[in-house]
Length: 154
Length: 187
Image 1 (cartoon, rainbow over the protein chains, first blue to last red):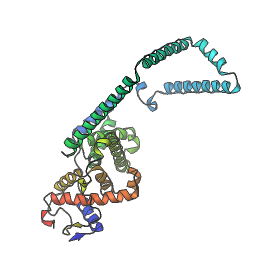
Image 2 (cartoon, rainbow over the protein chains, first blue to last red):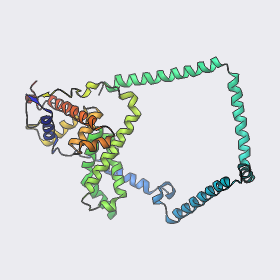
Image 3 (cartoon, chains in turn purple, green):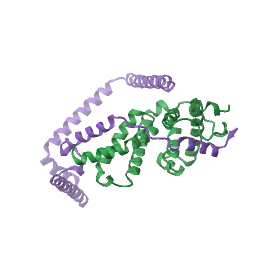
């Protein structure tokens, strides 16, 4: 006898309906309480904002507001025409280490570019091609092994 | 143990089987289902003041367990798509159009006790690929509508219907093969 789709739906529903729940593992309760205890023992700054003490939340709010005000003030000055150079000068007076960092990054960039230019293009593209081929081989072998050994085993 | 802990322990004991069952039917893996159940109860603890004594606590827990299981499956699927997406399509009986040949039993489990039924159904569900098992479980166990399932899974309504149709046929075959209903299998 053939079952229509509707009959099959009813048969499956009757077959799976009213099945009792599976018993949860005994370890579940212990795991939940251990995790709750671990979370409770964390210092406040490692918890989410909602769990911070009120003074810390207030201080964070004030700091955020000050930061936002500074950003708005800087943008406002830029738009008003104080000029990027004027602003950069004012900032660099206070943050001299930024100039040093910029010099260092320039040196690193120029050194890298010089090294890259000195490598013959054939070597460069050959190495990149070899790297891509190795990567594709590893992924291909992994995917084949997974499909052959893991999926077939299921 | 503090009174609050005692209350939460009682709450967990009342619902942990339901939460674990919901997760294990969707992910078909005991260890992952236990991780998901743990996450559900950690969330429940955060809302315990509202959930304690609430009539809707069971529904809330079931919804959270379902959503966390689906999130888990989606993360896992994205990570392993390259490795697992090309599995053979006959895994769950892809013959959606043809009708299924069985005798017409009342259920697949004449004379089988409830605990054994549960084990047989779970084993049969475990043989289905994710794309069939998940919508089937959402429809027949979680009692969601086709529309709700399509929304939760982010797929089209037509795909949900097709997958559930194929899943039913595959489940029926798996249950029929399970041995208890050998006598009712016609072909």
